Image (tube, rainbow, N blue to C red; front, top):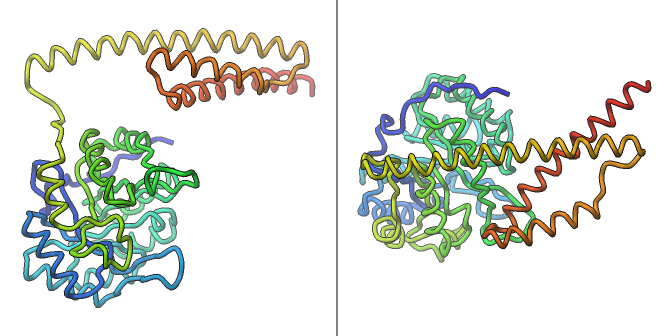
Length: 370
């Protein structure tokens, strides 16, 4: 499906963020009390944060957990906005949430991962936002479905939302992982390729699930050239009513942003940089062409094998053979300094394409016999 061009207003015309990067949205996972909101907001404002976030309605996995303070929390955020000159932001998951946010002067809203995965809710929210000028960020859906993510953005765009951006918060996985959510950076990179002008935030708190990893996820986001970070920060994380393990104190956030994080430049005007990078990229282009030629040759041989299997009435899938091939190339790949994951991903894709090509040969034969 062709990617639709969205009518977007650039991030720095939203009146919330100033260059240079990263643009930061920070605040507690949940607004829990007036005291907690005001203390955290004060600490973040003192370190230069301009956009203060807090969850008002918290969709929890299990009932009985703290599910947010509701509209009362918006009163606390409104007070923080007035006293500290902050912009305020929260998550919305329904038409009612949107109307409450507009009533209390919320400056930015975002759609959570569960909401993005539900086109009915996205459309309801889009309809409620029609004819408003409020910026909207959309988190990736729970599962790695880039088209579902894009579809949510299209619904909002059709409703006239032009201050539109995304938040990468990783994907749910059943596998044992270092992080709470699997980053699957390749999906974020592919999304950026499709929408290079879309404001792109990364949520290191939800990806990492623990304060020990927030810095490294934030650094990866900067290394990849994304625009901003949405980070959870609480005045007293150990007392937090939700996601206590992933929230930094304002002091910790200050240390990370101003002393630990290295922000990369998108490009350089240096003649030496331009000359060297041009030469290296030209080499990459030549190597890529060689890879394509090699893949074409391999597929020709694979089709010949498919023809031979058809003539001898042999099944396409030979799992023991493929297991042996994969083990061999993984071992050889190590000698070239390539990771097992890299080799496995590449060769499994090649194998799937080969199986499909051979299946087409057998299918053509079956069709002619009918």
